[in-house]
Length: 146
Image (cartoon, rainbow, N blue to C red):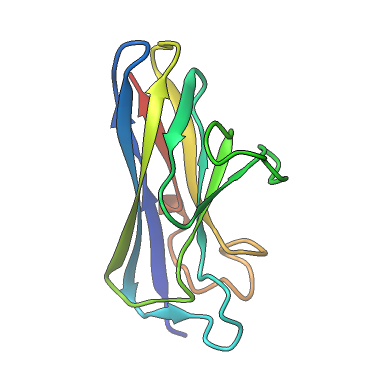
């Protein structure tokens, strides 16, 4: 069986209350195989951001969509508590994609983090048919603020 180690990295940003920082969240296919949903055209995976407490997303990258924490409809592009960013329906080995969010620090909370993770559009990595990823430990990261 071919394997493809998908991973995500978070970021660390800092600033005073009222300042805006850019948080770069990066997906990578570490290979050795490429992954594609050529028949369905579904995204290979989604990069998810759970926004850190005390911050507000004020700029959203292309391909990212706002949601409630549970994945429901959120009416505005900015200010949502969660964002899901779609990847294409295929990713070659050694391919990476960075999603840059503008994050305003409304309240300084030392050591606060938000969750960054990758998910298939349905199911979970490590389970059939997404059992091609040999290392699930790098499928989560954090967005640290201050």
